[in-house]
Length: 423
Image 1 (tube, one colour):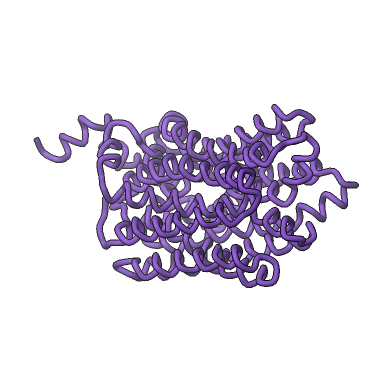
Image 2 (cartoon, rainbow, N blue to C red):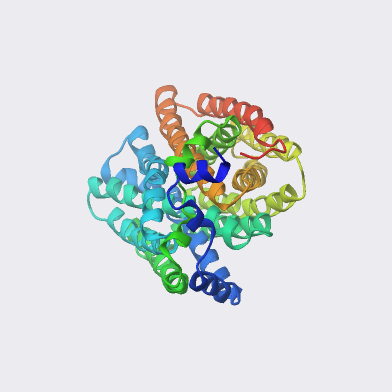
């Protein structure tokens, strides 16, 4: 059986997916003829991909006091959204195939705004339920963005990955730095501090409308170019050892990042630092991540093998975590900076590997779906485990020691994922 025939059996209307209609080709040319419109949409959507998560961390202690939560229950405030980053990634492919990637991204931004507002309702159920909506919305953004970039910027995929990763982390930086000051400005209301970020999601939704209108000029088959397909032809991705190596690196680097997102300010305050100072240092950590997130993908795109970058980012993260273990307050700014460069570089590298290890947009979308489904389910274990171990041991030495083991595992699988091969 010829390869085209095999593809047609695995994925119905495969030829229609890769051959845009005249109307679709014209629509895409119109979109790319106005790159500023597309770029603004991508940047504003990306800004929202971590903002709703970063806004919670500096306020965890206030949220916990409001509802009388234990350390383990408090960890669920940040872990539930991360869990649904993985579970939501399972829904993303079907939605994108059914409705098209651009409309689903618009829906995700509106769902994110709703989830942020639900999360601040005066109920613990709403707190966690809003987290479910927030995680699901961000999952849709996470999964579909690499496929869109591979499709619309095939020759500049690495540089565009730098742009959207940098925007994602920049959004988290601004939000993390603003959470405590906003709480004070709103008279000590953590609810108002969190709710204000729903406006950011609404703004991004408005900016994304032109993409949806242009997408209506394409055929339904062409829209599915960027839609992750986890069934049919996508099954081959799940049988690929390289795909699993990329997926595990994505998951392990996400795990160490979400442990910090959930617990970094608490680690500092538990050692005597003021809550305001801890929030500022946490924001600094996010700010420094922009450098790694923007620079590492650019370097990765110029290398045949990204192994030196794997060693660099994992070593920086391990060194930063070790510093938190031995001198959490006196070296707080240093460790925050070292971790920031490593974290930003790692997430940028993980997202770039999805693109570089894929031969085309369809494979990039499938690999993105796989890596983010499994990766974020794995990452969700981190904050919960760290909180439970902290509660059991009464300190942060053992939880940090466990994260150092995660760094070693990420180094191992990352060296395999960084080889010059494609799925």
